[in-house]
Length: 285
Length: 285
Image 1 (cartoon, rainbow over the protein chains, first blue to last red):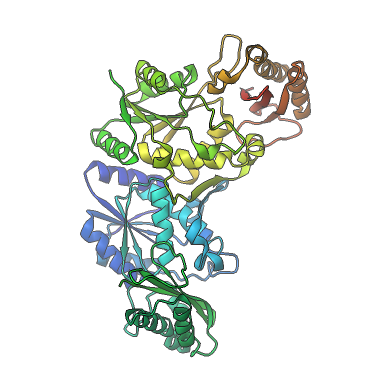
Image 2 (cartoon, rainbow over the protein chains, first blue to last red; image 1 turned 120 degrees about the horizontal axis):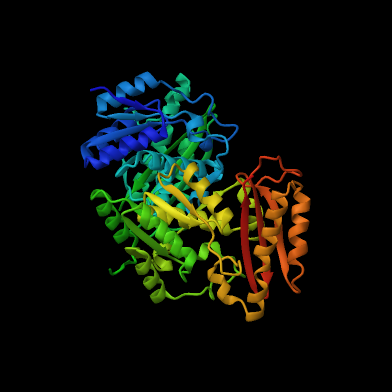
């Protein structure tokens, strides 16, 4: 089955209207392309739960800061379409930058609160860019449900808040992080890693697993969780840890001592060479 | 025909979905209630061009600054419903504040550029509040078209930009300002005017008409338009003029000298007693 490629917002809306008029349930998987097995699992989940799956591919300039990797972000459209086809996607919506942000574009969606922490603190304009582009992709593709990976934990929180606060009538579906055999979370950015850095990158998931183990064994001190993770991360020479933190899973609040029943998310961002990696795990008592 | 009252966002969405599934075209007229003939003309226009008209009534706290008239903004729901009924509206969507902005609400839509001038300069958070609530009302009512009055000239510009920038698939329909016999633009806030101030309030439309006359006679100097309007406004003792300005109708840019073919908007905001009034007229050569 061939994947239909759509590049124009208007054509995407007309197509979505026709699908809806025909009673089809639409699932959308927003991506920046260079698809990996994590995206594949999102497409498969969307296919199970909807009649038609739209995968969007758009490397969104708004969510990159000036010093970040927009110009080098990896791309491979032909392979992406093959993956979409194999996983059961019907449509790829791939607008160019000028279609999404024409001259005169001047609207920004900001999500306050918990999004200012962790990634928000290190990438101050990132989540405004995410919220704005996701709203635009939702309005273009008109889905019933939308699929995101848990790996981008705060991104999911931002989109949940966006959907709730703007009354967007779309079901948010969050799928588990897909990992390499050694535990490294799948990411399009893993391709940046040198062979040495790739071997070391497993340290993020190892640190998270150690925090999970401590939590299972009864640890509830936020500082101790931080120390456990940092001690493991810093066994890798040259690693730069942006944060290695424990927080309440639903609010990202940071009590000194967690209660015994709290769901706790462990969040890490660290740089190996020039590559910045993030990962997280959620402890559910 | 009875007007159906809906207070819950979810019920509004389900109702809109059912109307759309039945092939009905939906027009929405967003208002803050206390309806006057200006709103009436919007409802009538929506009725002519759609199968079902939804009128929203919501006095939006986000678009009032702390010192403004939120708590005293006039309300009369019973009379509003009578007017909606008489003009052909089928549904009134009237959520309470807690339905629109529950605890934890933290999303803001900002429109940059031309919205920072004139009203935006005097009411710095106003248009963020307008953009945010209008997006929410659009997502709740799922209309095909939306009706606004030209009297709120910059509000229309904000909503046009919102729709364009976020790819919201809704047709924006702008209806002419409705005026009292003496020329005063209809406004819910006119009820605040004392009898004396009410008699003086006609000065805004008089000043605009004089600028329109000068433009017809060939005047193109922005400063001269400003002086013409201010001279007339200041014949009223005690009036405080926030601005009396001429700008390009589509961008609100302010060239020193307009070109002969330019569409020019004349914009006034002025206070009489404690009442702030705005009005505008557009010159089309």
